[in-house]
Length: 119
Image (cartoon, rainbow, N blue to C red; front, top):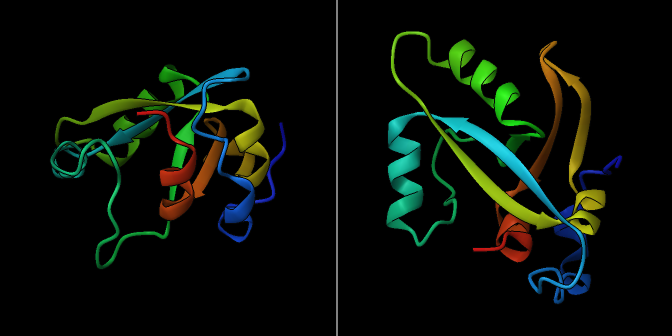
């Protein structure tokens, strides 16, 4: 599903996106230990912080996330997290068919992810 990347602009339409009443999609993200611990400490949600990108990228497969982990963290261990969103939420996430010559990926603004991520 192609996305526009404009999820934050559609906040008023997202009230039902957290209900599990549709087809669910799993997305995967590789991250360093400190980002992972930050998510754990904040009830399994991303937080905004200085120097961070405003969007968080997610691979459509665990294997692709592992390739990103190896690319971005070659000297240290990394974690891969999995989130679940409704398929219809993907339309408002930015989509790249072949990001970094690895594979398909979606990106969402942190406030948007709060609205659509199933805890």
